[in-house]
Length: 267
Image 1 (cartoon, rainbow, N blue to C red):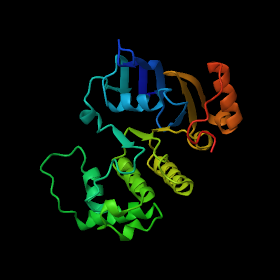
Image 2: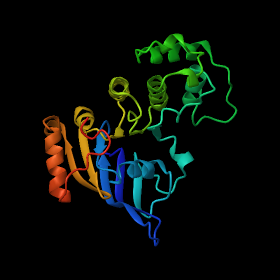
Image 3: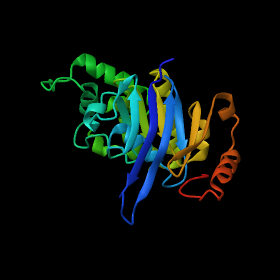
């Protein structure tokens, strides 16, 4: 079976040779099957977001290979990788153009990777498609196509960003703590929308989260990272039976210390 994502022996050290040297990734190996929805947890500085940024090409890695759907993207620029990836960030302000309308933002996402001479005019057919897609969110945004995105709430913006990230059915959807800036009720709604989009579009996804309960409740596979390494990888039925206490015990066993109760860890 072909993997959608293969990460081989990934290494990344920041500020090498200085007093601030920090090993962020220490030989990470990871394979994702088509349709895997992997949640990634770990303490601060464990390497969670660094892994996602390495895949997205935010900076060069020191060593290793990244292969998406059989294509080696290790040396591709961030811009060239964009056609493989959809991304949603922690900050709802990233990922959309605030001064443009909802439909204009969606048109940009829909035309990503197409030739430069694109027409700005949004056709009637496209508008109908956007309405249908927005309806799925259950937030009433299908009636607000001409509203500037900057006027939306954080949760509404994050929901639109998700929709845009999934629009071209990317090979891999990267969700980097995409609900961390939202209140609990809105976060739950955005997670529900994430599940739906991933399932309906048969996407392969990776979600970094600080919230152990969310990591257990969502996806078919869970990975725990510590000090730049994957220390636990569990999927299927075994994952479904997990409790937060199991994850804490696993962490303590591997790290020899208490799990620091950093931001929302047990909320």
